[in-house]
Image (cartoon, rainbow, N blue to C red; front, side, top):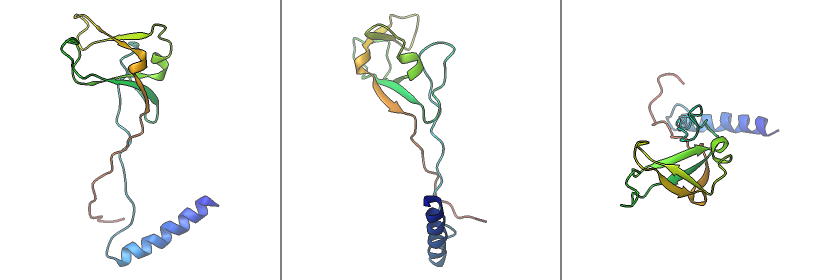
Length: 123
């Protein structure tokens, strides 16, 4: 039912948009960007639409081994960590910074960037 209704809407709106001089009414978006996991060595990618935990570094002077970046862990790497904190850092040869797990926030890798509007040659 909904699929049929959506198809009728698209057909109807296409006619209206074309009468206004445009090619079509479709807006396209890029898939969510690839995100890297700071967890286990064999885990390196957070998939599109996958859940992850993140921490933003505010680059406090006491945290000299953290850039002002975002540290992300996939849910599969984050949950098995038994301690109440996680050691992170930009340079593994330097002292790692201990961040409480409760400061990490849950998110979903679902942010799509819209493609810029261009004139269609052929729709």
